[in-house]
Length: 366
Image (tube, rainbow, N blue to C red; front, side, top):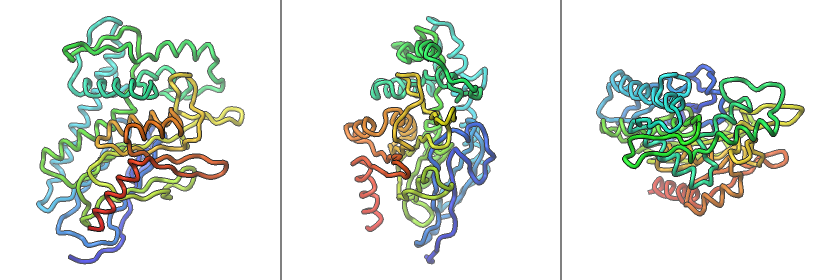
């Protein structure tokens, strides 16, 4: 094996990627990740194979490390087909997507669910309850009201009457999954938006596809949500950098080594509106109907599956620093918080986050 030195840095995330044009989804604030590949170390006999594409209004990037060769064209086609299937299920922009058809179904009318939709709705309902409604996929009417949906914000902020009216539309418990788990029934009009969990779920589905093809060393990224498995080309855990908020893109606040896990981030420091000198975050509190006001700039959650990490990162931004940390500690969740101070940022970690990094670092030493 030959010694290698730092050779490349790949920026991945759903803000802007080196291989990506800016899209609407690229304006949605999420933490930018720096995947550091090719840091000093011994390179293995394995080769790195990478490909990318577009899905769910954003981009994706896949890296596979293999010693037996990879038909990149065939694998890329299979991944794209799977992502197209998922986009046709979860898209809120496609009129004939499964989610759009569910949203247009009349109250009380049974709606047949695909296995994928059942997976995501079941997880969403579980986390809706577990987070005391901080994670709420029915919040779309409030997001639209504040101008963070398809239509841009107007000059006038919503008034209390408008907010109260929309709050009546966001009770996610009014979606009931039937006992046979093949149908869902809305007990009240709902407009469900699964964007805070669907990309993470898609990441997990691509990871399952790769595992089925007997690939075990890979990185899957869709719009900033990640699954990391095995080792990189240097026989080391994947190196991930968390971007420093409000500074130049690509400046890392924290760099960590990770493997065999999912990771997602939610942040409010790039997607907001200004009105009369006041900054309003794109993260809406589903209990008040208003943008959250807390000190969190971003939250990164590390979880065995990217779908849960995706949803929990959103929920933690709604909860705020104190409640989110309490929840992370009580549920043993690895979470990393970047907190806004007067003129700078500080960081906090849950105990599970520290233990996870200690375990990975110990493996590296051995």
